[in-house]
Length: 167
Image (cartoon, rainbow, N blue to C red; front, side):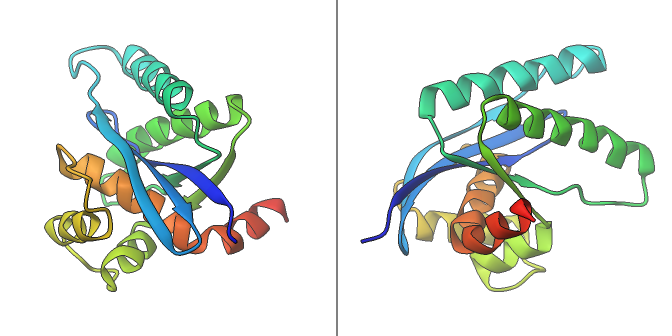
């Protein structure tokens, strides 16, 4: 019998950080919770990062995941935007490390492929597949659905991801 693992998926961002918690036991997935952290867009960078830190810390305290999966930064032509996204991602990694949790990171294309079968899927396709794979899930936004997709991706790839993280 496979062990039951609770996974927190994080789709980091300074405007919206999506989070989703699932449980997996072998190939079975179960929805636990999801949501979006929305820092004040007018707040200084440090305050927005603090908001993400405090909220993710509360999510971990409330849902007790064993492992965390974080989406890697998508590098766009806008270097400044990529750097800002990297700040939010760094906070997500820090919160997980502070909690003593195992952390895996996944590229956006791999996440989309794990959930939809194609790495070029659109956000609405990801949301639709998340709802099929987790019938009880009703993510309030694409950010929450993306976070659940990160968790699903980790559920499918966690063995290999954890071996890589240890090397």
